[in-house]
Image (tube, rainbow, N blue to C red; front, top):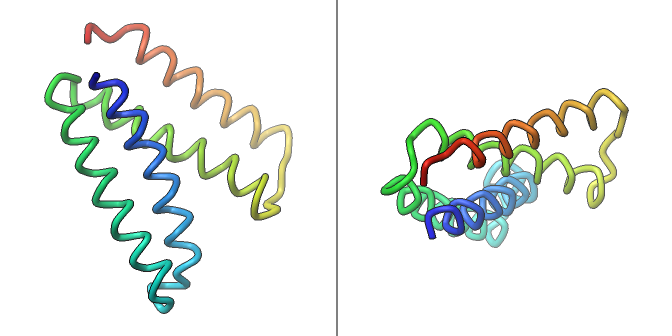
Length: 106
């Protein structure tokens, strides 16, 4: 169950990062509300996952899901630049996340 919490927390991190961009520095009400709500949900689920997972593993996986998810969303939805170096770098993050999961006792 902690891994499911962590996965959802990471996806919520992607959501709040997207909301943060859309809030334009918290100057738009509804994107700002969305950002705060999804951030709180993400932190709460991360805290639940950390009850059973090591700090370093949980935090690295949470930020990794958020980073790769925001990277993909930026390219697919927001038209951000894509290059071989950027994609390979994101794949290295994914490889690290897989390594952390496979080497975790929980």
